[in-house]
Amino acid sequence: METIFETGCPFMAISWLWYFIAVIISFSLGALWYGVLFIKPWAKALRYECDCGADLSKGEKCICKPKASYFFTMFMQLVSTALVILMYFILTPISIWLSILVVVSISGWMKSNLKFQINEWKRFVTLATIDIGYFFIVSLIAVGFSLL
Image 1: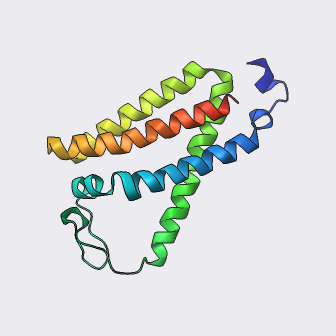
Image 2: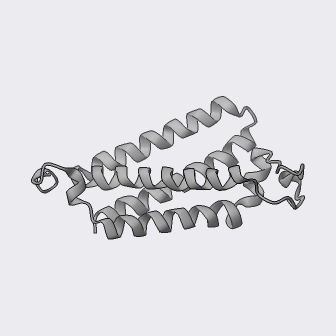
């Protein structure tokens, strides 16, 4: 605990190389997670429809080009991922138990938030497993890389 506060700034103790690697891996994992591995069950549970009206939950192909807002959304997702990982890079050197507490509490909050939005049990379990599973794995990546 003393090493993080010796400089007076927790940012000075961060290994920025490992931080950027963790961000790139986590963001890439998100593309793989939501774009390849779980696209069909996620789109079905979410009842996702693209801008051209194709219902991805029914297996229809989205043929329209992404709007400019899509790229803004992806940029904001990258920023959000980077901030979550930064949180772990600050917390883990203080206490790994604090980081574990954050993982568990945010996962629980995400589950509760989904449950308030989705009454159908099967949709809820699918979305909770996919979304919280991704958050949990990204958290593990962040905590692991912050220990290097």
